[in-house]
Image 1 (cartoon, chains in turn cyan, green):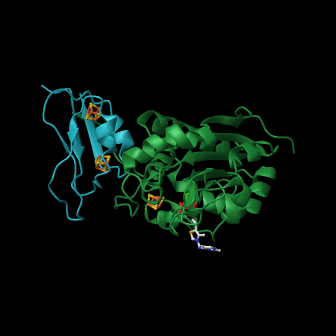
Image 2 (cartoon, each protein chain N blue to C red):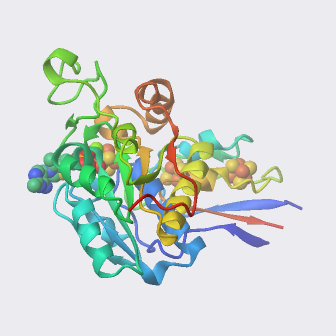
Amino acid sequence: MAKARIVIDRERCKECHLCILACKKTLIVATVEFNTRGYHPVASKDGDECTGCTLCAVTCPEAAIEVYRG
Amino acid sequence: MKKVFSRPKSLKNVAFHYCAGCGHSITHRLICDAVDQLGIRGITIGVPPAGCAVLAYNYFDMDMLEAPHGRGCAVATGIKRTLPDRVVFSYQGDGDLAAIGTAETFHAANRGENITVIFINNAVYGMTGGQMAPTTLLGMTSTTSPPGRSAILDGHPIRMSEILAQLDGATYIERCAVNTPQNILRAGRAIRKAFQYQMDGVGFTMIEVLSQCPTNWKMTAAESCRWVDEVMAQTFPVGVIKDIGKGERHAD
Ligand SMILES: Cc1ncc(C[n+]2csc(CCOP(=O)(O)OP(=O)(O)O)c2C)c(N)n1
Ligand code: SF4
Ligand code: SF4
Ligand code: SF4
Ligand SMILES: [Mg+2]
């Protein structure tokens, strides 16, 4: 069971990739899909490694990331 | 699972118009977070500027009153003196605060106006296309300094925080950055502390934010964040510049 997970609002994502740099566990990845504003939104990798540290969300300029823990 | 991080309540659920990676968006969220944490949304009044943040009132779910370019401190002074029980902040760029609004800012700080200034230093006039600002670094190219800023032709970058800290009316001034998670967390704490000082009636407070502008710096978001640490912070070192200590009133 995963300890934590993040939810990315991919419509809000502007592809700045700062969350990718923020995640020490490299759990966020670039994609080639488009959102309706023409950006390639990032996605979170499935898996159990997310610690819920919130650093990706703290960094996101679009406030597009929510973090769940517990 | 429990939600442990989400959008602050005071930040409206609308998309920002800012460029990808822009420090304005991050700072907006930090201000809203501070307002939520202190429970002051109903009594907070923000004063947005001319500049990229001219539409800031679209994002802050609280009272906002737009100031003409550079006049944030004068407008905030008027609001605060009329409604002293409100928490009043002005939000100003470096072109706004350090060029056209130098006099208003200087004298508001000197009078010890009990307001908080959030000073977004991105070393350029962002909105109008990246012209040189008083804060542009030596050697830095801009649309009005194509070969790079020259001290002989253009003067030196102005460190407003250090200058204002010399004034007796200024009580707490810190320079922060929003280029890394650690710096963002620190900037959030500084903004909350400045609001707390204002609520304690201490006097003028200002948080300067080194704020990446990937568009006018002609960098990716990641490069602009690195540049803040590697280049910009050499001229504008981050840290507490003045702190008289909470609760202590300046002489009046
Ligand atoms: C009285 C007046 N003069 C000039 C302008 C044009 N103007 C709009 S924004 C701006 C500079 C913005 O730079 P800054 O304050 O650094 O904000 P940024 O866009 O970089 O966040 C200028 C000169 C104006 N709107 N009003
Ligand atoms: S919460 Fe932490 S571990 Fe999880 S994705 Fe975000 S940065 Fe990575
Ligand atoms: S930090 Fe936010 S806007 Fe930037 S890539 Fe990540 S989710 Fe998208
Ligand atoms: S021009 Fe610069 S300051 Fe203005 S929104 Fe774009 S990145 Fe932000
Ligand atoms: Mg600017």
